[in-house]
Length: 391
Image (cartoon, rainbow, N blue to C red; front, side):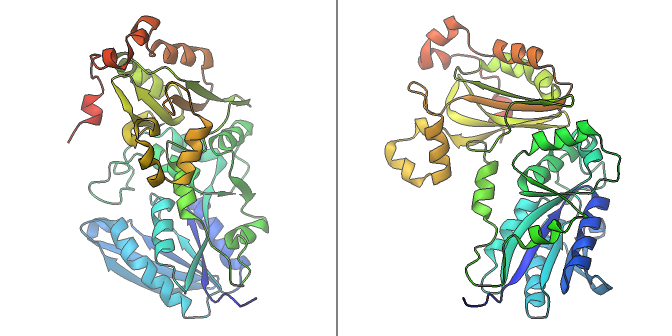
């Protein structure tokens, strides 16, 4: 088999800065010839992103790159690939891209994969986790700007929702547990991302996960960014299952009947605060063709359109839909409503399962309202217009 001369690249993300740094240091010490590339966005307010390249012995080079359109993350994207290509022409055996605190791994993974070519291969994405900090970060509704972690003046993300996406995107979670975590912390982590491989940062498995099967021979496809993105899409997300362990509960609520827009809107605050994390897809009676995404963490809720339900598309348009989306719809198909459904997942310590179910049920159309059919539903109050129709 022909040798693969591409430089393996692993991305290490995480808002838990101390845990992330420890994971990176362990990789540098464990993998001979490995080099870490880090862009520090803390000084972005001064107009520059600081670049640091180091190995197990210390700093190899330092530099800076100017902001792009006032955005530190944009500068990172512009500078990252050229630096990786430079490393690919040297003796580097593994490039470890250590993302800054609030940078989300999906964006950078797609950048690296899109420019990999014949010199680079993205092998894996790892999020570093201190299990004792999972809930405090998830419950933190502060804007990133308030925490000094905004990547641009227009960055309106919160600590909680940023951490949730960092955690749920990565197929590998590297745990840095200094004895502060308890059973509840570990149960919460397992329920938030049950399909992730959890590996202790101090174990020898960390280096193997960084390479993820790359053995230096041609044929390794690398990290599949399309599959990773599809797994996050609300239409086919790999959502957690019902669970109850160590005081942590995950409620999966699945119904076919549409929501009454006004009653659901009135219940948003209570629903958003009912769990540390909730996500999924839903539909409103007055917008029967629109798949709506639900994403909440830290008391902050994002509701937005994720495109049409497949049931609303003509048959010819199905060929334009990704296979994973078609498969998810087929598995969840209803003879009357197609793929339209309520599929919401709530995860939290101390979750009031019965109270939450009662509240959700009260937001559905009543038998009388449901009997009016789609023509009658169009006359229901358009309560979500301020959220969904804002320009």
